[in-house]
Image (cartoon, rainbow, N blue to C red; front, side, top):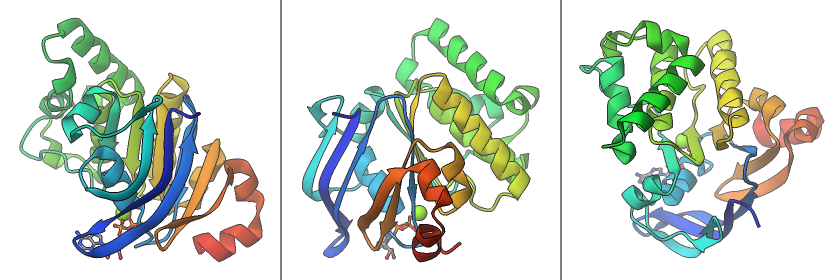
Length: 235
Ligand SMILES: Nc1ncnc2c1ncn2[C@@H]1O[C@H](COP(=O)(O)OP(=O)(O)O)[C@@H](O)[C@H]1O
Ligand SMILES: [Mg+2]
């Protein structure tokens, strides 16, 4: 049994189905990747796991228990989503943005300082810019801030939606590297990506097509499989 076990998950928007029975298992401590082209249903999957979208069928187990709580309860239990598009608060400083992510540790000032120190050690650039308004950061820095804000909630399972979107290859590499460090420090990670370069660091990879998982395996094996890459990833 994994930290997260999803079986036959179905969800959509109104009467329009998008996920047609998604199944995947994510081991505690692993770095997992969900790859797929635009419109495959990756964001929909994360929204359903975060409790932000109703599920019409299927089972999700987290830490051995059925996952049914409100979005807030899920965050408190350690499931933290870093949403697609970053959504930092532009008129607030870096530090204020980070503080907003820390609502689950409200009242625990030691934990807050510990998490803040952790974020600044993983993203030194955020430490250097802690008093800068988030809206004046570069795209890469805003992505780091969005991930850092997620870390402030003490995640056990971090869901990261398309961190590389719109970033240069160099910044993408930096962000992927940071996620690798976060995983090495003990956080289970599920990254959603269109960039197959992420397979290099993935223990487990799932390919999603039209609301279904069509390939699952080790990230490194998939990276080497030209046929899989051409057929499913468009690269
Ligand atoms: N709010 C929405 N209302 C209706 N349909 C949506 C909405 N968001 C996404 N969709 C549709 O759901 C499908 C999957 O979208 P999404 O999960 O965002 O894909 P991905 O993240 O893989 O690019 C697409 O066909 C998209 O048009
Ligand atoms: Mg998406």
